[in-house]
Image (cartoon, rainbow, N blue to C red; front, side, top):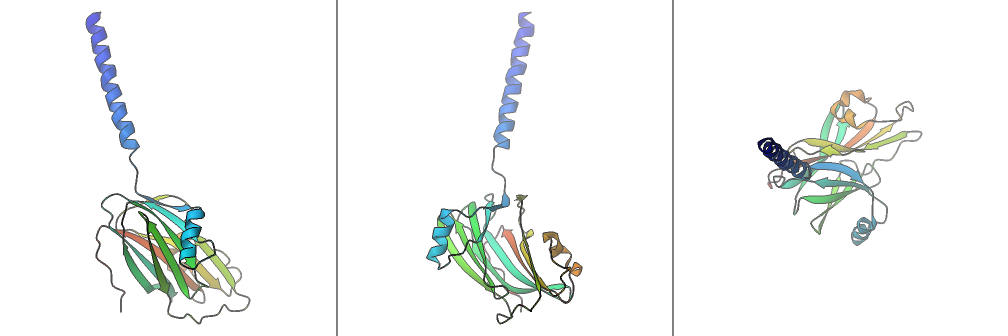
Length: 207
């Protein structure tokens, strides 16, 4: 009986060790990107850069392999995405927040990235800053609204905006970024994407 009790105790100890290791592994932070609520710190940082409106906030947590962030503004042209502007920022930490301001679309976007107590501002401009919104047009907007896992070199659309003269085109879905032919040729459409990179080298804007 004592021999059986000893085996049971050893089995229970082994299970306890395995369970503890599993819980420890499960508690490790996962790389992810998700929308966040604008807080007082975001507002204070925005004021330092001259912004007063509430931005859209995206929060990320990355593993040690992620070294930089690449972001791109696209405009749809005859069913194909054309790069309007692109930029890179080296990450100074594993966690951060990205504030996105739509600067009277479609003149461009402003991004303010906060990472490890360092704040960086980037202005992404499009090719036609004098564009004016047509009369009786419909403006549609969508953005990332759930937490998603991060994978290096994966292009993630976080913002999609459309101006259409057709009132039936009054909504857009983020997944349409991967299917640009779902838009009408008469629509004005812009997209903002993020790529988390394992390299600190900058990507060049295509000529």
